Length: 337
Image (cartoon, rainbow, N blue to C red):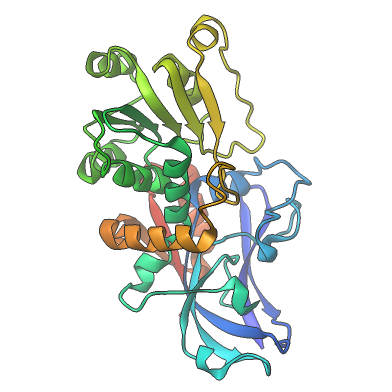
């Protein structure tokens, strides 16, 4: 059987190719993809060639077992329907709608352990954002927001907006977001932020300080811009926490770790969804986090953040848009029919 898949072949270059899908093994199923979503921040960096060459794509995802070395497949948010099963797989899997962490491709083979059954009450356009929402849930777990705290979120892309939405359900004192794109700031306010500012404006720091003069208890850096880390540190109060959820690839972060950081005992926390904070690992596991993510998808309805839909054959156009006009592209999904 042939399938259509996306290859990153060089900086600023992708190709959509046909290839033969391997035969099913006895313990695998075959899935026909309905939608996949683009991880805008990560895949824009990959499209630009800003990744650390030779590093593993993602050791926690079996379908991304290769290295950052052209050409390679990428993507990790796919929704599809099971169309065939191996001899050792229960026939009841046929026709089931599933989510899987798979590269952009029209079909794929996977074991049932690599599949997450999509709840019947969710649309494809909602379920395809499970990975982004799971990341947002993990960010909240790592930040441990407390009642009455002042919280900052740098970056209002999809993950930033989802995190803002989750944080807005907490009894916080203030929830302030920062993003350089006006449309995202508007969505941020609609999603639950109490205020939203452009971090590139000269008066941004003063505007934040006017609302939280003592600084933030908790800040999230989700913009993908290393410069935002210094802003997060500068806007944090004594013993504040800064959760870093961005992946910078080859971009270096030049941090100012002088007086304010040093004297204020500010905590920098690395957050990555493939693992759990050790203090939580005895009580939290992936199925529990998936359930929270599904519930959050029901509340947030991430399909409303889809700004562009492309057929997989037009993938080059999608990445060109992300590269040249990132402010216009928020949620991008690929279709395969």
